[in-house]
Length: 152
Image (cartoon, rainbow, N blue to C red):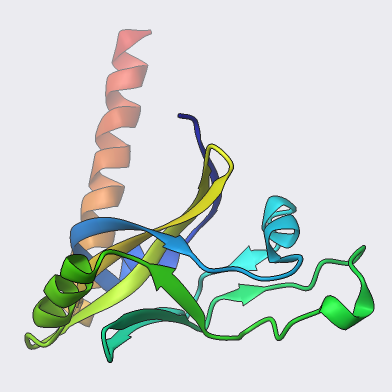
């Protein structure tokens, strides 16, 4: 099936080390799927809470669908349930109870006609880690630029 990316959480890769990635469905209501098709989604500052045997997505903003019926409009920041198997949820609960780990949404996309969310088991970066990552990226860019010039 074809994977069509709707939104990525670039801030997550800047603020966290992504250890593992998982795929989950999202329980959506009303015209939220139509709003997602218009790419009016923001994953910044959202996170996933795994309590009471359910995984909930907190803080994802889906703008209301403009052409939708007025009484169907939902709260854009409402908590949404993630569709995962029970054993996956139990595994994630165990992993997030470790010191410094959290679940962060990385990407929302369509897989066929279904809306999927890629979530990552992440460990927070310190400021010196962020500087180190930026320095590595800049060095790689410089090397690629020099190689490209020499190839001409």
